[in-house]
Length: 354
Image 1 (cartoon, rainbow, N blue to C red):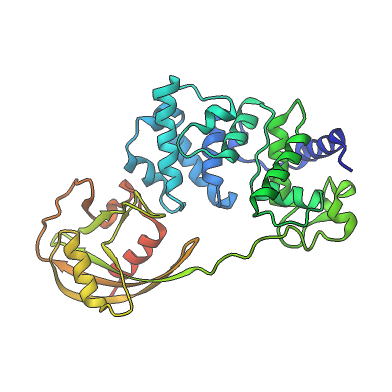
Image 2: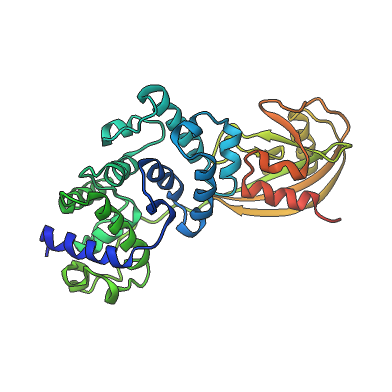
């Protein structure tokens, strides 16, 4: 069942016939692999493709990204989410230029030394970009291996992931290591899916432990996730006489580095009107008459956020244009900076028709 040549041969033959036509697989390069792996983390491929294509047009190589400003990078990332990925990719590009002369490191160890690159991304780039015999264990790969080897332990446990990585690495062939890694990812994404796996279309069905044991529908075992934290916030859209809106750059959290409306988190006793006024004041604007525009809900990875959205006429402009942390922007100039999907929701409510 665990014959190395048999598994690799079956999987690679299937991959050659069934792999999807993805832009980073056309004229592949280590740079394309790095960008695609950053973008694909916790994001479906269909969403990634247009972002990847725009990103590569603007930043065709590592030097182009290293020379860009943070706003240039986050503007192209806007809406893709998990903005720490954009900041880390930017930092990694600068480290490659500064410490490696612009040449991509080729080994897992040297790749892991770059900002924001963990074990999975390092292994994926080493294998796919340079043919190194490495194994990239992501959620898709963990699911495939848990079923292939009929693993009853939770794949979220560190010990289980270590064991699965070792078993996956043992299956990597000496040749076509990159294609083998992509084949495992592809199998998990298209056939060995979380619910109702398509075993009749699987090239490994005959050697799958879960299939033989009848446990494919129960595997993999996952550790129950904690409930999302419920959060209430107030956002205030301060609009000046020219119709420009005050934005502040988020310093921390999932949206760090992006531009957002002034926001404050509510506690159980906070009054939303006064909170909105305080948010504007903290951003450097004095809010005139406040109008409650509506409510927006947005679910993040660990937080379920409901925002009360206010609009106010700014009676001063103490927060000047071009600042590092505050900026007045016309609604038609938002493409110049990174704006999250959450902020776009709040802005639509704030500026929409009365």
